[in-house]
Length: 218
Image 1 (spheres, rainbow, N blue to C red):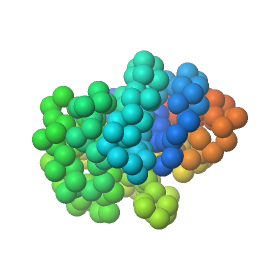
Image 2: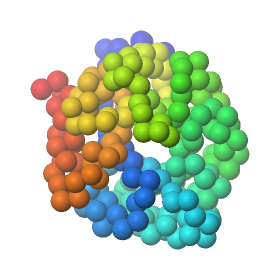
Image 3: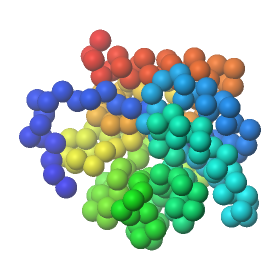
Image 4: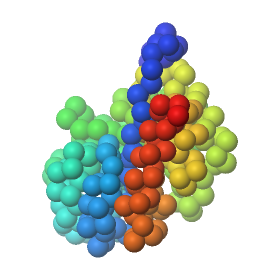
């Protein structure tokens, strides 16, 4: 993996938004469509219900048009084998081992992202294995995340040394600009987008404004 140090003088592009749906996204297709219309969204990570594959496929297809017709990539939370069958653009895998297991089903046509990276070593292993991006700061199974200072530091370290894009997970709007300033290529947002269904559009528009402000240094 090549260093970014040689291009330090180059102006970094404004980071892009990456939305993560709640674990139970049933009935959120319309709300997600509104969010996608409020700003340019690079990708949506669809978390799947605990159900049969048939029901999961139906769930994915119910969101696919909403997401992809807006120009965003539809990524599945795990289940790489369903990506090809449903026309999804790729999958997000939790940990290096799952990433490696999923690569044959995803590459070269689809995106393979990787999160759940507990250490710098794990992140480097994911990059070496062929991850299209790495994610730092997303909540774990119990909903806990590392301290924000540690997330920001990990993003800055990766951005300084590696070309593979990194996603910084923001737990609130206030974390967006620090992650962008640290060097995140994408900023992911989850519950803070979908918690207030009536304010979803406003929150996404504000998130995009903060990214633009961070990218321009205004």
